[in-house]
Length: 249
Image (cartoon, rainbow, N blue to C red):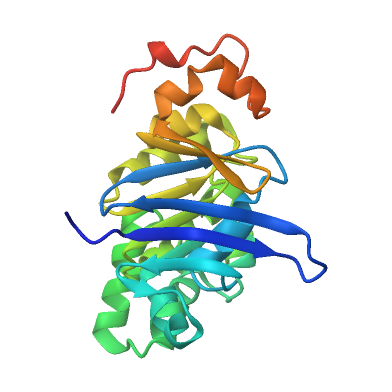
């Protein structure tokens, strides 16, 4: 068996006031897998994601990224290996031009000269945004900014792409464009989303969290088709959507 791209073992975490957020969460993701993390608001999904690139440290248990424990000593390398795309692209885009934003991460890791330019252009090409390289990010639409935010992460050449609500607030055309781009990437993907059809479109496997616990882990179509499970954990498909009729990619 390959070394897991992500391995979370018996992970527990609580706020400073003692409120538990994660309770003995245990799962692994193998290289090349695309996994969605589903659950109601307050389930602990964002807190879990912040452990995957060492923004938060486990209270109990462990997190391992590509065989490397997510500890303070390994923070620098963990953040190179795990590309986190935040829900709001404006949290990631702050330079005068798109090109400078995409170059920022690898430049901070010592990449320079022709190699830096090559990474920037490769990342922008992967998300279909080469033509806006010299434009200010704030002149772009939300869908374009989100694609540029993905490029800023891809320029780091990560092993795992972690996406927080990638389809939120996008119009249908931008939503489909982003899905097409994400499907084209040859990378391990871990996606937090409330958009259940998007999870089915992009991820063959889903995890369900509720009240800090992992309550289901299986093929996305089976999870979305389990009405009792969905109802018990406050997950709801759009009216008329039948996951059994969706053809897998």
